[in-house]
Length: 420
Image 1 (cartoon, rainbow, N blue to C red):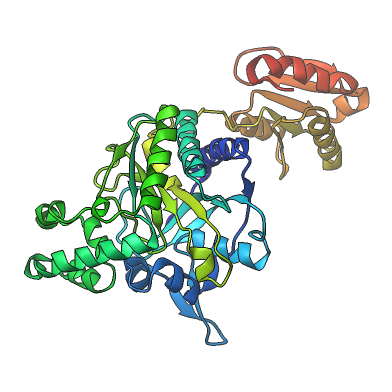
Image 2 (cartoon, rainbow, N blue to C red):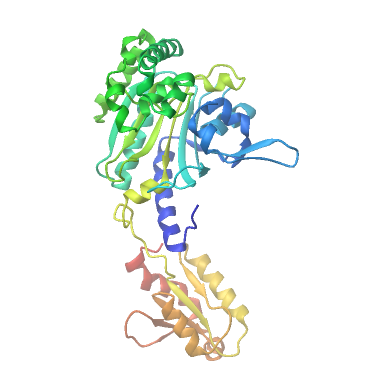
């Protein structure tokens, strides 16, 4: 788990704001979810025998001896909140959320034990059109972030019935090769054989490649849905690769699953993943509600953006540093600073606090990176003026009437900063 320092936090905010603007343009609304939930929420939804539940969750007992867990993902909490607050009753909901998630796994590039995700979920829509919109929305985010070399992989996990038949096929196949499986895969064989297909063990790849395919048992409903999605993506000119071995690590997925990947982050190249979870609301006691969603990891997107070339670089230094010189009361500086902020929305103004000599204040103004210093002292206050000094180049300090100061700063700063 890492601290995020101010310079890096600025890049985080830029990234988040860029993604959120795109999400809002598609009509999705924000929901804010607790960081801590009852453990059973994740055990039931994610899958009791998944790696997340058995190995990675941060789980503890509270003072009432109730088992609680730091959220490892956002979908389960989103479904719980929607059920509790009636968001799914005879209506559709398009929601998004942002925040930290927690998994106790081996840290690696772009992945820490506290990591951050933006997730998008849509409820009440059963057709492939919303699947396509979800994927097109991702593509527009990559465009906004100017991210190259991003690849879409697509698959269908079928309906519950076809997935059960596929599970039986895999159990039969891998049981015949049990001695060739590693320990993790033997465990998955008992509880979730589809997850064997997701193994990264190179010694198993030949065995996995020869395993039965979902299309051998895919029913008409799931097949038609997948064909409809592909037709819509073709029309939208979204390039993709059908990966019949693509499965998701969470048990609640069915029908459409997808991943956006890159080769620029090493072996762990997934930057966004999602799919349908039509049975999850019913699993939590609600009426059946079709649903689909995705989540993207912000750490990985920041890694992918490198030194920031894919994010617009903006200066976070103050535009103006306000110096209060001499023996005058600081309240005059405070009042002037607020007046200027009122008159010039978007102005970044730093008021000098903590006293000090005129020389030391100017030194701090220069070190702040500000473009201009505004000075009020006894002489200026008596004459109803302020001094304005350019800090980034040699220039004579100007004396400007306080009544004209806001307009003067607007003219001086607007050419450089598009100040309103």
